[in-house]
Length: 119
Image 1 (cartoon, rainbow, N blue to C red):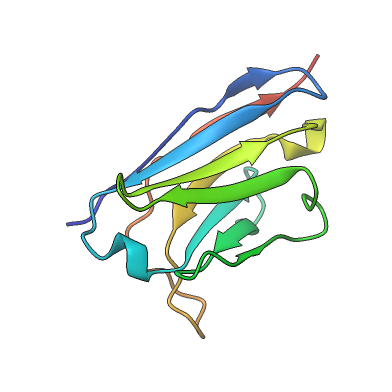
Image 2: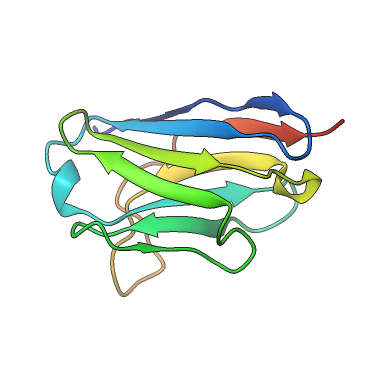
């Protein structure tokens, strides 16, 4: 079964940066779109970045210009570079590959990585 392992979270001051990583064991990694999501307890999971198999990227307005998604297809890793972090970015961050055209994702959710933005 494919496992997703997120890492790189931590405590950072407002204005700081973090780089998150998501490692996948799936051999088809390079053919999928990959997304980063975040979730605050009690809220729905929200999309924060996406990268297609052709390396096109998309971001919601809330993170555009501050977050950058990238991938290394030789290592099966998706990255999320987060700059100019704000307290409202505090959440557990997850990655997954969406099933295009649906609300579903391809793989079981990993444990996520906690990002806390606080002074």
